[in-house]
Amino acid sequence: MISESNLNALKSILSNNNNFVIIPHRNPDGDAIGSTLGLYHVLTKLDKTVTVISPNDLPHFLHWMPCSKSIVNFEQQRNKATQLIEQADYVFTLDFNVLLRTGDEMEKFLLSLNKPYIMIDHHQMPDDYAEVMFSCPEYGSTCELLYTILDKIGLDQYIDQDAATCIYTGIVTDSGSFRFPKTTSATHTTIAKLIDKGIENPKIHNSLFDNNSYNKLQLMGKALQNLAILPKLNTSFSFLSEKDLKEFHHEKGDTEGLVNYGLSIKGVDLTAFFIEQKEEKIIKISFRSHNNFNVNRFARAYFNGGGHINAAGGKSDKSLQETIAYFKTIIAEHKDEFYDELS
Ligand code: 5GP
Ligand code: MN
Image (cartoon, rainbow, N blue to C red; front, side):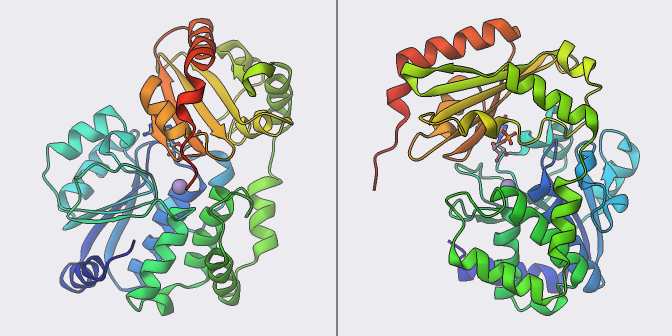
């Protein structure tokens, strides 16, 4: 729900302050970068001083986005990033619900400052750190939520072609190209308005999805070979080891979307994808489900993660083999506890 009081609070903050930073989650995706850059373009048009500060690098498939080069990288440009955040009157946090999603170090830095936050996000179970909190899990993307908020406070006119391109990108990527359940008629109405602003939607799809390297497709082949099914449990899973990632010269973003293949198998309603991240000493896990299997609850209960009902993530500090064995045991013993009641 977008409340009137939050809209009024945002309007007043925008009229009374000039200096903003906007932060997406660590390992930002299309919705995180689309929403932060979308808002950046609008605030720039309003003559605000504004910078997007990403906790770490963007994946390659987003490098084409308008003004992506202006994004400051907290991990690589620490001094500049901390200075900008210290100078900001308000900090927007977009597409995440707990400050830890910016990473251990950035979270620590943010907590040391006591800045006022404005959250715009669509993940469930948000932490209570923001002065103004637009937390709307009913939206399929932060970008769609952002558009709706900007429209409601009369800023639609400031959404130019670049802003619209960014916002469109987040809606396309988080909705799986308009196929996931939260895609509503309102989503398509928003898309229609963005197209009327002159975006080149075929070109955006092309930039996002027809930009693969040969290595990425080979890595995808490996992930498909590693795909296994637990037929009695309507579950599948796949993995990529550090060795696989090295063999195919993995680059950031190359594994994006691979988890969805496991869910496309007939009869499967839950899939998991495990990626060995030796440097961070964790196994990063993505979960996807159909219907009322709640992977947000599942990832929170067993893998220190969270997300949405049908798309969530988590991590494990066990080895790859141990993590997969643990997953299989939990699924065998507890899978039936994670089906939400149908309303
Ligand atoms: P993905 O599998 O694409 O990385 O993430 C799917 C969804 O789950 C995204 O909305 C993402 O923000 C959320 N998510 C992924 N990993 C984590 C995590 O470790 N913790 C939490 N709370 N959410 C996560
Ligand atoms: Mn999102």
